[in-house]
Length: 486
Image 1 (cartoon, rainbow, N blue to C red):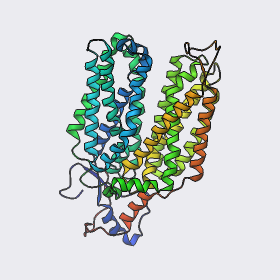
Image 2 (cartoon, one colour; image 1 turned 120 degrees about the horizontal axis):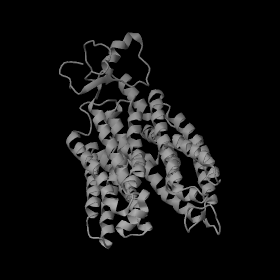
Image 3 (tube, rainbow, N blue to C red; image 1 turned 120 degrees about the vertical axis):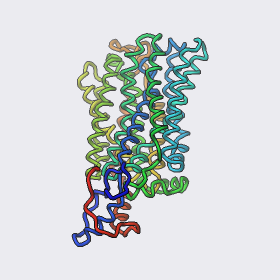
């Protein structure tokens, strides 16, 4: 490390995907490569985002695993309890465009700190509302807290791609994006396990709200005190220098005229919708065949756990190989096959092992696509801001999720007799909706495999920046090869 360098600087990097220059120009090229640094601080930024994403997910799903207890404590119906979770989806769609503008215009630091404060405020309002006098206003106060958490969600969930681009070198971007993105389903898993264990009775709901409020407060302090800047002192890659350089509305126009991006927007948005339907309707689908709520919870847990494992493995692979397109197409195809298999075995009785295995495979292949597809959305749309390109894909998924859930519920038929059912009074046949869901998943997967193709625009820009022209501020004296971590 040269004299006077930032002590937080870790290594000096260059894109690993480009080939080495010819031996005669090695020293000249190394001078250019030494311009880029990465900083240890990036791991703190990543950790704050992961914790914040996880906390927001636990707030989102606090009441769903203990719906009966929550309904009794709040004096509300089960339908009203469901709206405590659905408010996140409703709020996310209109706010998404403002969030993408904020990330690409005001910066990562402002967006994350605002998200952390909204997340903490929502958690505290819910907790304090639990001590209010029971009555119609109790539910409204808790809903107010949920709404504040819902306002924070887009500010948090759109951030991983932007954070990875600004703070991490190109050979670590995919795994950083994966870690930040998968912290959201990890939070869902934590809530699914913790809520039933803590709130065994309606009287324990305040304890549950306190358990989720404490981490939200700690994370808010970490974000506010620790996030000193939106980006490091010097860029970790060539593309980070121009991250978000296109004006917001010009970026939207470029995306709407980008054929490859539109294919990804529609097809991967459909994939997000299928996964939302699966998570939302899993218990209702399995109870018809006599499977208990506990077993449905186990299947949901396997779905998330194997999804996180798959995402981690695929993130490491893509970071090393840069095969974004191949990885996404293969995993989408295997995910579609898993969806078809689930639509068959979920309609069978006494097939717990088969159902659990299929749910695990569905999560392993399907969840792993999300962070890689978000990186791919940036690669095919560069130089449009990362938050804009990735955010619109998420919006597409949210819109299609609402449409799919409404469609699948409309296709159900009430069964006159189902002796094994554990569903209660309302027993519905999910045979037709399951086949429709599998058909939609297969159709959009085929469209993506056939029609999607793109250049890696961001990687190409980095290669040109490093090897195409000499930087004006490149050192003029010979230096040694890039060092490992200082």
